[in-house]
Image (cartoon, rainbow over all chains, first blue to last red; front, side, top):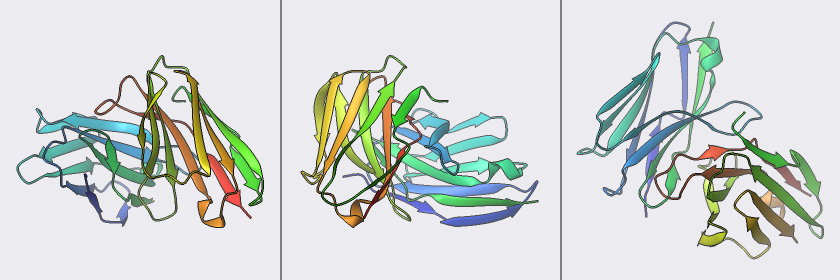
Length: 109
Length: 113
């Protein structure tokens, strides 16, 4: 089955700096790659997603890049703000979604 | 909010109790999911229902019993649980299965004593 590796597990950045989270996957049949943000006491919420026919997608301060050849994709957050502090999960879907283990992002004021 | 509600939000139960978790989605979706989220581990898919039919059971112990009476409601019946079953149980829904975007509820925090 699919295996998704996510790095780093924790990430601290200064407010205003950029944050990058990287994921690799194993199943070349995966075609859908969402990113979720989970705040304390809440369920994961979709923040951006990308499909395999696209190499990059951007939504304001958030961007995702996908390299299907290398089987890796990344989340980029620019101009980070304290409210960006949360756990971020990547996922890859062939038949079902498989999630990475999460990255605890802390944005220091 | 995402349109997926879960009750109760918190639950404490003994190992001999029987309880049920409830999930309801207001999005008109056809697929519903149960996930288990433990500390420091990836979300674990437990069950998938598509058009009320169970299409996935990821080797979940029989002490967890799902029920999907219609496309909007999903239950997880719990009996004779173990302390290691303590976790956050998340429900999600999507328009279809597989590569469709999933929308999650807030979860039920379960503690088994």
